Image (cartoon, rainbow, N blue to C red):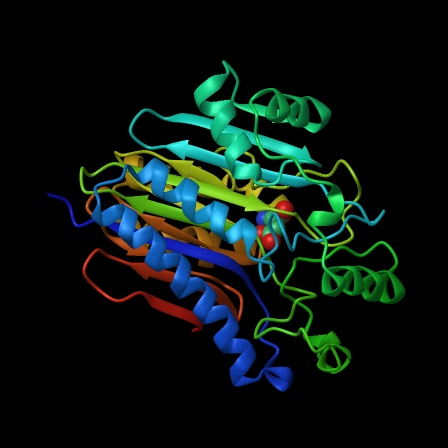
Length: 327
Ligand code: ASP
């Protein structure tokens, strides 16, 4: 039997050391460890990788610390538009939604697109309508927001006009953010706060899922890499399952998640070599900052990032979760 594994990320970005406290750091590491525990239990029961990543991303969406679902960042018009994707490495089946505004858990909508429609990607009102028809839980858009996220938008608009930001970056804003009692170990103004999970189950099948509110102050209608199969999310049993976080435009231009798979399939690179090539060579050349988590069907894992930190963790059945933020 394969050595099953689950790995997840909660976004990458700049470390806000000045305002970091042990309590805040613990809030993040505890949240990640608790979610890894839930995923581990599923893996140990023999659950399919697809079901494990679905559940794990759902839990990350429900946690306000991360930029997905409850806690998603705001657009420039102080609204929310969420993106999510899921892919099954066993069959290459995939589903995604972009710009949804009323689905409580966008990853469940992405999964419904995959399992219950002839499509791969649904966007905007049509995606919300599809989720409604499929009986998914809908919410008022106020559900997504938090006071901290709104303040993050207002601060960015005061400072930078049309500037948009990843969810955990902005060392230049550290001083201001120091006053923010909700501040996090990674600077919330510059962090890429997307969430993602990858898993290899006991049968040696892999799957990946990603979900995000996108980038703070993004123009309504902007779609990043997260719901684009091959850019922010990809899974193939023959190579790897990959979930990325970072400057979406660069990850799309570099077809980052698929590039990991292609480097393994066509150039014979190992999982680690392929992930490092993409994150440390290819993305910087496109001015892409961020990272990814990846596993293969042998249960190997890689979690490279080119930012100062990335909220991340991994767990295998029978062993304790390992959670990290910094290098
Ligand atoms: N990749 C996401 C996007 O561009 C942002 C993130 O990872 O935080 O929408």
